[in-house]
Amino acid sequence: MMIFIDSSSTCTFLPQFLSDFEGISIITNSIIIPTLTDVPCTVIGGNFLSSDMCLVGPTAVAAVKDLHADAGFYSAMGINDGIITDANEDQSVIRREMIKNCDKNFFLLTEDKFGKAFTYKISDENRSTIIRTKEKS
Image 1 (cartoon, rainbow, N blue to C red):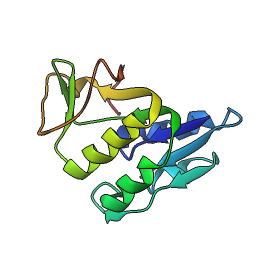
Image 2: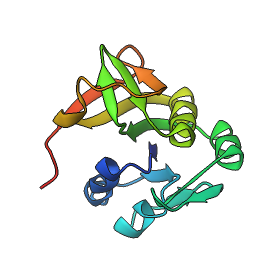
Image 3: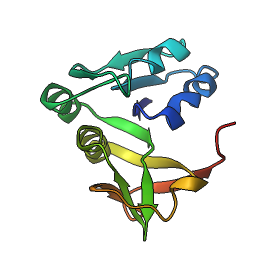
């Protein structure tokens, strides 16, 4: 099973749970995710965005266009009226491309993100499953 995991801080807890499963591989634009697990990881190339410790830009988007995943896990800065949005254009573009090339998409959103809207649309409730998560402690 191939899994997309974006570079959001909310998704960094996922890799620790994936080690118990056989046959899973991760594709990510995060440079942190591979350090958190022994699950095989493919890190896509691109321009380094130090604020989010990830790779973005045209090279990253081109890489994702040629990949497919069975499931994808993402987060974003807000969800309002079923529309998932973010303030970072580069991150939003990568997430949209991952969603296009994925069979099942899941957004992990903490309670503080509900009722908030930002500039760049990523997805909506019709294309992705929304999972409410607890605030980080």
